[in-house]
Length: 226
Image (cartoon, rainbow, N blue to C red; front, side):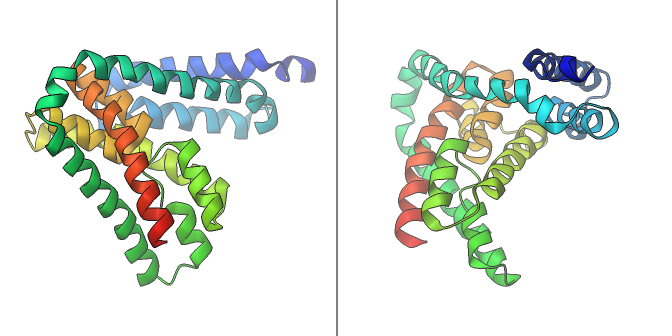
């Protein structure tokens, strides 16, 4: 049994199975709290905690799926290219929205950390929460933060965005697909973009573009001001 659980395929199959179950639950009980990202993660945690499968055994295969984050992010460029005419028409609002989103994200985290007297290293770890994991880790490392905490903050931000942003888009009647896409890309990076794609082609393309702009703007502000 020990040898079987240590096989990398176990972690991969478990991840896929939990996500499929989460999708089914989300369709039966539609709610921000039953988002597949939340439910799938909860199922995996329960399995690791209450079964003989250890975290190290799961990561032997589960972490392999992380290798696809880079290629998937690049593939988003195809969606952006397909919407290039719309991009040219809305370039100023898109850039303005990304700059505003980056400033709000950074300074709101900084303000609350100062308000609650959070130590500097932790503050610098969670400041880049709204950019992709690879860039957030580098920013955190250069600032002297804890990279493990940074990864947790990035994932939590993405899951929260993918779970609740589609709900807010409907409730607030945000009908402009460009605005909805930029909002989700600025707030939830790649994970938020996955949810934006489910809303529509335009939303997905604009969200994918926002990931790159947010990364550039956030890096500049973070490195020069923090």
